[in-house]
Image (cartoon, rainbow, N blue to C red; front, side, top):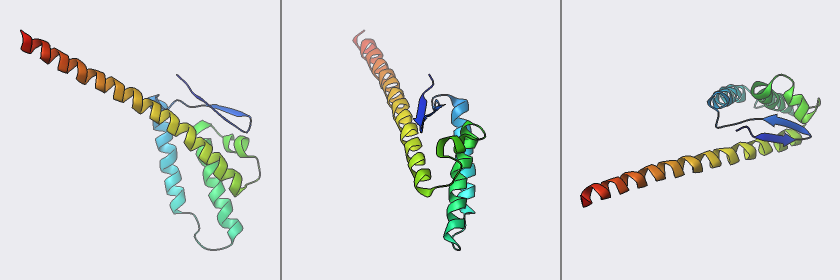
Length: 125
């Protein structure tokens, strides 16, 4: 069941329960980690900030398609807006992960309970 993330009047579909989506998410974040390692650590603040923002634009483009970063945050790079967008996105993803984890825990818990009850019935016989 797809979930819709809404940010700045943009609606994007992302279902972390879908394995293909999860793989795309993992690839995008792996690419972002590599880009983060290459970010300039010294130099002109504006150049460091531009590279930092570009990394997030590319993340959204990798996840949702080319041009998504610009749709979400505009054509002009803004560190504050980049941070707000990323935090909103992580909150959205984390809520899905918590829901999936809860479903998994309930399912596994139910299996353990069924096994326990089956053993109990066998011991009565």
